[in-house]
Amino acid sequence: MDPQSKTDPFDLLMNAGSSPDIWLFVGGPMAILLVIVAIYIGLIMLRRRRDGAAMDAAIDEASRGITTGPSDTLDELEAEDSEEAKSGPAQSPSPSAHVERAAAPAEVAEVRGTGHLAWLARLKNGLAKTRQGLAQNLEELLRGKAKLDDTLLEELHAALYRADVGVAVADQLVEYVRKTIGKDAVSDAPAVKAALKQRARELLESSAQTPLQRPDQGPWVILVVGVNGVGKTTTIGKLGAHFLAADQSVIFAAADTFRAAAIEQLSVWGERLGIHVVKHKQGSDPAAVAYDGVKAAMSRHIDVLLIDTAGRLHAKQELMDELGKINRITSRDLPGAPHETWLVIDATTGQNAVAQVKAFSQVVKLTGLVVTKLDGTAKGGVLLNIAEQFKLPVRYIGVGEKAADLRQFNPADYADSLF
Image 1 (cartoon, rainbow, N blue to C red):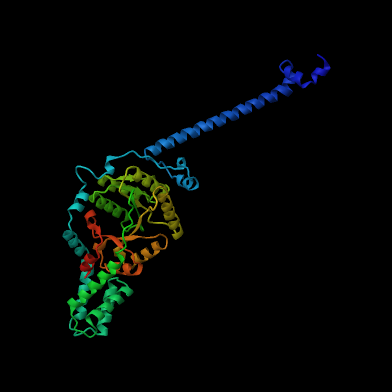
Image 2: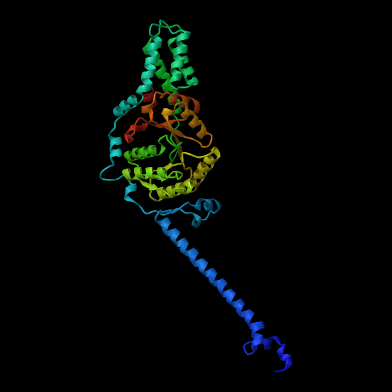
């Protein structure tokens, strides 16, 4: 071989296989490079195949309405507008989501069978402790008193305050008695009671005039909030029975993912009433559950969607962030949702219920109240206090454990039962 050709790159490459030295210094590195490139390409293909399998599995789960763990899809939703980025499952229709059935659940049948007179009897029985306490105080105050002087009116104010009506409402009630009956007039117990009842009714009616915000089309979305222990999840179940009794279809969304017990409890109510429950695992994103609930309600043409929320959060900012995210997500596909936000409060807690209304009013726009456990308290006057302070309408009140013990609030009935 010509010495010149030994240094020619072309000749070196062509003769790489015939010379061990040339193979070692030229062919070897090139072969190693090709092997590395092949391994890299193989890893990329393997990763793409794995990602594709994971996506197929996620789509398959979404089509069945199943979420296996905490969801991050809502964070992606807020960053991307494409429909493909949304995780709204196309859940298969279920016969249990409709109210048209041969035999209504026992709770629904009982709600339908409870007339106004029967409910009024339950309400009066539930408020018996408050009413008896006020009546007894009035009798003791007016016994042997010839006229309504300043001393007697001050004692009346104290008696009303002990019924948890609050200072401002007690002032209004006493002033109304003063003007209606007249200072230094004959102390007539029936007349005093009638004056108190009339003014209480006026206070409650003024706050109850706010109409319900219900859309002309699409599901009516109601967000239910409240601290743990007030009976929030149970109240949602009872509300579901009432809507079914009114021949409206219902879906529950178990967005209280903080407590596994809340998800289970709502699932039990759904099974009892034949209502579909949209739920994820404990620890999932509550807004993801609410979003899936809206999608399911829209696809099934459901009338009412009730969304449960966590009742125990560590800070107001955390509560505001979570409820704000739920509001944003539910309104993406259904403008205006949630249409109503109801706070559930426990009447037995008295002034603590007032503090709860104040706290939640600071972080979310409340549109109504649901008052529970009026049957076990002598503090039924707290509704007057709340109505005067916050001007919030009371939508429903509960006087017992059964679904039929929950009823739409009627100011006149409540005032009559209170006094």
